[in-house]
Amino acid sequence: ISQAAVIGIDDERMGEVAKAFVVLKPNQDLDTASLLEWSKENMANYKVPRAIEFVKELPTNAAGKIMKYLLKEES
Image 1 (cartoon, rainbow, N blue to C red):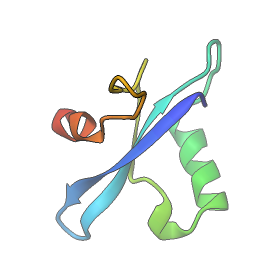
Image 2: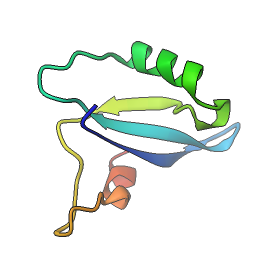
Image 3: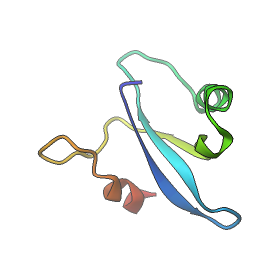
């Protein structure tokens, strides 16, 4: 994984859950199921994203910080 960002998205049961946006390294092959399996084995349950979206790049500002509000608008 080259980059990742996590935002909260609305959930009827929990109120809000995590959604991860992932940028893969060039020529890397990774699927949602494998990443979720790794997350469940290595992270606390409440930290495991309920959704994962693979993207080519994350939106950043001039300082290189990820603009999470744009990710939330797209979700």
